[in-house]
Image (cartoon, rainbow, N blue to C red):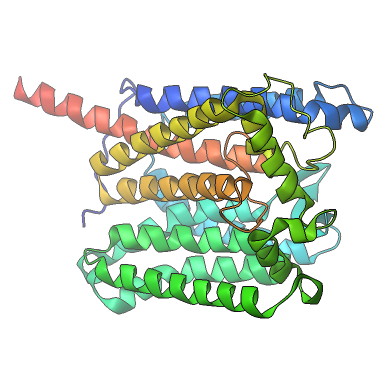
Length: 392
């Protein structure tokens, strides 16, 4: 594997397809976020534009920062990888300190500094996207072996375990591990072993779910995770309680029909969906814009992921290719899980929808990941321009 192929340019263009999809998703998400959060803002005594203005400001600043950062050579991350990993691990450990940790909705997943909330699990995701590709590049041809592959999985496993043990955030822990697993899979020349491991994990998980479904009744559930699995099987059994959000989300989808009730006309966001601007924002999209609006969101994500995949395939070196693959896996996993939860194809997880769900840390990290991908795309353009120039 080639280590690094440095090509610096100030004139290379980014992938305009990627940029267009990013702008459309961010703008679409901001509009839907405003629609979903206006009622909550008014209920809290705030201006109805409060969440919209806050998210718009964060999103605008992060977008401009991403464009600026994308002009830098992404290889600088090679030298920052250890600092990023230390920052991710350290921020998760800080959740154990009462002075900095914040409990929201029964979960300790946020740190607060001077009134600004930060979610350490999001920091862990981008740190892993940089660190694991560096491991694969460092090992070079040795990465073909089993032990090097296991070594590449260790950082993601440790960050995932730390996230789960300290914050009890299983969904984020699973995504963190999955990002590391996907990058390792993408880097390894022999993929059959990863398919076997993945299949075994899925079979074991399915067996566990069916065991719980067959042996545990709704009134005998002894943990909230078992309860979530039972909600997945039969939300109606938990109507008026822990399954209410799933039921309301399904009602929202049904209310939307093909063309929706119109932008801003969702009724489920008026108290029925308590996290309408975060965990259930896709349900609001379905109710207000209907099947075709939801389909448009899905197609925008597919196009964005397609452009990221093209950039990964054509990246100037292995380091850039694997980082792009990591960004691809992160956005794809979160989008798929969020939508799956909304339509009850997955148990409730609390996973946000990239670019749509309100949350400063999530939006910041996602934009920084897009900055990395845009930087890689600039290097592709620079290399192509250099080759054309040399032919002349």
